[in-house]
Image (cartoon, rainbow, N blue to C red):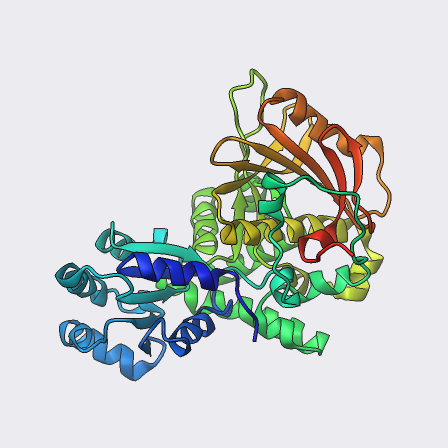
Length: 411
């Protein structure tokens, strides 16, 4: 069993708010986390609306159902019975004490207006992503916090020889636990099919399930590409308005992660299209039939998938950080790019580039140098993640850092 970095944040939130909504894709470990909180005494009871008997009872008489719940109950897949939420609001307003309910849901709170509206001011929201590499290794590493509070040092890290395996495996606990690559890929493809044929129906009508699966595969085949709605519309044969709705559905099920474009009033032209990537590299690789061996051979795709891999690791660290940080990308009208821009609540910037190489060229720093010169007072650090073993200074506040620093302590 893995120790999730979000567990302590969930404990804190339950001690501060009447309700907590733990959202995230199916199979990321929400139920496991809720049961761990139950076993440790933070919660007192657990019910799941995935259970047809429990779901039917709640639908038939939501008032009696909620009245019968103990304070400190976890309600798994709460979005399946929206009738319960209004009654929960009344129950909370009667007592207004911390830790009354933990709700979990496999769709975004933004897509569940009945939950969001009922629980304004009464509920904290946490998002559980697939396992980070640090969680898989049981290492307490948060690179994002370190980037804003410490300076990198010239240190060696474990090599990245198993990088292809990490990318092909991804972070869903079931996939991580499997030693059979073929069975794991089949599970991941079945997972995608189930999302489209079952889970998406809870969010809205889907006229073309085949087009949705094609859209997922297109995004998997070109990780971290800027959103090109017109191009995706042509390739799927779906109207742009429908395609935008399908993308929103996938985002609300936490399968697709948009990375917005960074923008600042710098007197320079910055492109505004978000980048789109799947939230799990294992799922992306399985959808386009890439295993560990093929990733080793086809370096172009592996390089793009590594960019997605690093982006999602950064996002996982952000969700567990004790500071507010947002993730962006940057591209100018002149073609200068920075793969990721991290911005703190105070406006400090950390630029990140990703290279699937053991050696670097001066040109690899071009985007970071541009960001540094464009916002010199806000620029804290520029990092190129690469597949070498040592952190090396590359200029003023510019570093080459092994990608394994995202989950390992220095040797």
